Amino acid sequence: MPDTVQEVIPLSEAQQRVLDGVAPLSPVQIACNLAAGLVLAQDVVASEHVPPFANTAVDGFAVRAADVAHAPVELRVIGTCAAGDGTEWHVGAGEALRIMTGAPMPTGADAVVMVEDCEQPTRERVQVGKSVAVGAAVRPVADDVRAGDTVFGAGSVLNAAGAGVLSSMNARQVLVYPRAKVALLSTGDELVTDGSPLSRGQIRESNLTMLEILIAGSQCEVTNLGVIADDEALLERTLRHAASTHDAIVTSGGVSMGDFDVVKAVLSRIADMQWMQMAVKPAKPFAFGLLSDAQRRVPVFGLPGNPVSSMISFELLARPALRKMMGHTQNLLRPTVRAVADAPLRRKPDGKVHFMRVFAHFADDGRLHVRDSGPQGSHQLAATAAANGLALVPDGAGIDAGGSVDVLLLA
Image (tube, rainbow, N blue to C red):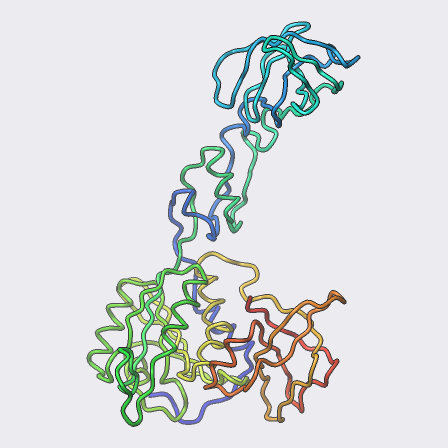
């Protein structure tokens, strides 16, 4: 078991211990349509031009710019070309080809006149009312991507548009850091999950519901193992199996100094754990360790049981570590913005940084403004649900109205 007296350490030291204890997962090949949100493990070099042929950017008529230099003019229409048309059209002097957006440019033509600038009195004739320059409304070959270009560098985080680019240039498989597979569990015979009436001393489970969403929102694959009974043998089997099938484990509850909890008892015996007390409020207690499984050492993040403490410790410690495991090297923490307090953010001196839950919005002055979202107790999750930021209020009496404060944006 851990010592009963623990040194209180700065949050930055706790974060560094945790980040130093995890490593990026081994990269895997994945289909491009599944890669959004993931980090590339190697450069992606285009093997094809995008677009592969010159095409029109508008509906209109493909022409020779020289033929319409003195518009209005009348030209002979030789046909119609739609997107996907494989016909090899050729536009000669005095001719025009009706053409639809995305269709390949015919040989001979070097510009497109928009349909709004034309009148077609008959199927065979068109009146062009506007002159255009060479290249007007034409998308050249490789206008978006050129074969041989490095389109995305290793370390890039793909978004939906990036996945679309991969598909457009036929990069069907890419090497990425995979989503971390995270096992989530809690213990406590006092926790009720089935909706049945509460007996004296029982409470309804909320942390697992909240944490499952937070973990999934961090681009991880989460397995919610539920509430495990207060049975050391059962918990040890559950943890060892989770370590054999997952990349990380998150537990809720049983990490405070005074706890005698099966989580603490079992993890102290089977894993290399650090039981930390941090100079922050809430989320002062936190546990981190490594549980060995064959050739792997699986990170274990022990979050406190109070709901707000559990959420904040996940945001400040577990989430950045999971992001590092998934290949992120920048912005492991959520962004912090300097904000204006619209009302006082009061606290008492206690040697800790307080993470006060606040509602943040950008005002007409272009600055972020905040106000507290309600009661700040570590058990008061309802007020936290109204917050979209955490104000970092340093030790002291707090922040006066109109004062500046750093805010960690949650949304």
